[in-house]
Image: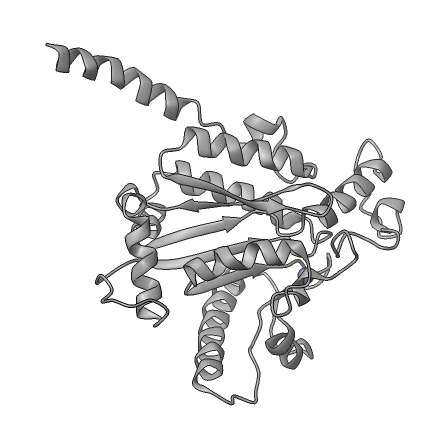
Length: 294
Ligand SMILES: [Zn+2]
């Protein structure tokens, strides 16, 4: 009798937890894209998702020079979430970074990084949409993705730079946005939001680790060694979508694999974008630069 009673008590608790999960629009009070979301509200929403969705872990990995929170979410199917440590360990064993025999058929690990350049500011808004979709959608494709992958989402790598841009934009925009390219709201003053507190381009810091944002992030990245890392940037308003082509020379197997993966991703992505009549670009001077600087 006690067991039945416990079941009756648990059902409404589980139901109410799922029912409390809110969309970004409902939580923030506006549709994503209508305005920029400052970092403290991004943090509020990410916490809300972690508190109200069953298949999410939230990890705080540090703070910026200006004291803003750095964090990421791990999202996957309930089965995968129950054996996260086994999956992580197997990946490191397979990579030769840990002793032991890896478990078979573990899911792929995908790391999504948003807004390393703070004034490419739609990235974090997109991250909120992706997070909500992954934790709430019952679409078959989404469920399959979560069964086959561990998705790690860092919604904002550079909160100091992004908030610098967002505050500038909110202070200079009128009641309605002005699409004219010469309007004040489109002329960001120096130093702009691209860099962090010390005006350092964090996109150049993955290799050197001179800034605390990078130094706090890298140990977590290395704990997972993701198979795929997507580094979300933003081109200017009239520019086409850009996909990195990779570049030569190819001095070792790692570079060769990276180039082939990049080529494969580029082809598939370009096809999808062109199908939607969106302009894409992949042959520019960036080609030889990005493969070295990232
Ligand atoms: Zn960028």
